[in-house]
Length: 601
Image (cartoon, rainbow, N blue to C red; front, side, top):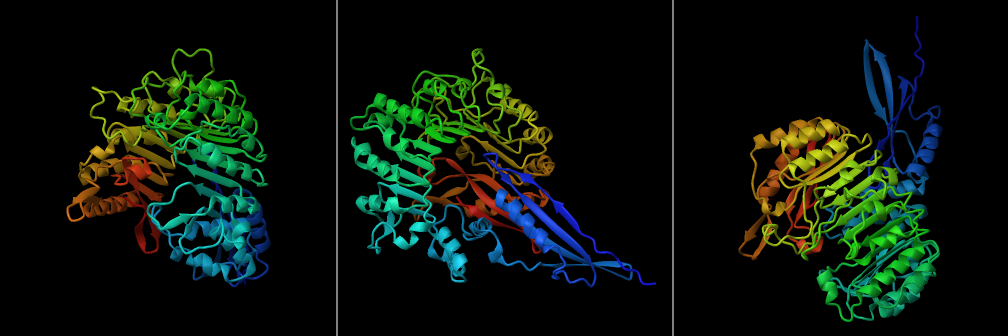
């Protein structure tokens, strides 16, 4: 008697949340099974349902879809599997999805390497296939623009043919040192900017210290930007903010929701500026912030430019991301609980202050004697990302963590000109402090009470020990990202034996969801002195050891995708750090394990 097996359909959906700002990565996997003899490319297959899920889910969450069709045949009691790809026109995908795909694959070079025209060949070829893909390719090729140009270009500020594709513009007041580039004429630039109707993000980087910087450089550009209909993000990185007020043009940017105000100079350098007026600068910045406070959703600002009392007395009804960088304000200290008291929508808080060479009183974010303000867990209950730098003994922030945190960073930061901590006892630096083992256990215990925590960063005084790793593994088994860095690692040139590395692997192997690991490990000196060129260059022995260790870790940590090792940075001034992460991507395929450098020394 002939037996007919009915067609079966199976679908599985998986979700994964990750990201510094609490963002999500949406992963969908669809599988359809059919009996032997059924053509998986036949129209009877639920392609329309696939398209429906693709468009509805991915357009809203920008994720990743994988479709597999398995044909099951029953023959001699054996079940055979074969995989088919469902025909699906690439051009029928939503534009947002195509952009996401190509933005992930178009440049396959290390992060800090120079990008050349050859890196864009795939995108250029795509632009030659059809009119729709040409538009998408142009948005990738010309989406970001700056006022630097090649010496051979003689036209105005960008050809008019690329204007519709430009989304982000960066304007510099200096020429690059490493590339033969020149700047556009500022007059041409100001004429062209109002024609860039699709620009939503502008960065001004003016580092010259002329007393009339604002009136000659910044103000004319800001008034020009008021004509842009979709400008949402403005970033001002310049040496000074004293002089004429910038409030009027910024107030006319009616769609502005994200603002960055950065001063790259340390206080000693700022005091040496010609005709510098610090009080005028604080007044100007406070005026800008109070004007845009009702509409801002993101704010990043140098602590050097603000007075904490201004934040405490201003309402920030829509602010969701607040980042304080550079240095602690040179004004009356206020607890961080007071600073964020009027930010009810806050989700990301970063107090990433750097220690500076000038002696300063240690800053405590949540002092034990502060009874006037509610704890962080009460004042900002929606917080999902918290970063604090240079933690001090007695700080109560470790006891006030909101339960919804997904990201927790406790880091040690300093200005790059502070070379050593050897003279700390004789000449104390302001508040440069990493976590002792006792402090680390305190924070790990606090992290164990955060059920949604997926990313943890701790900067330690010593190399991470197996005991610390075991404590993390037991307290936070759900971690997807873990960073453990030894402060002042540039002084550690030791090389641990493989037996020590194996001790580190055991606790890490129990973190089943771990995707990215950054850890200071003693692998010997990363740089060696080369007499023939009179400079330090990356050590081949170090690279070989990193490769060996990465393969060892990849074999034990089956879900690990990225691995970073601390290494001495030979371009400290450029990247602002004495030690950096030598990053490798772990590639798993049918040929086995391999690695690719994505962030070199």
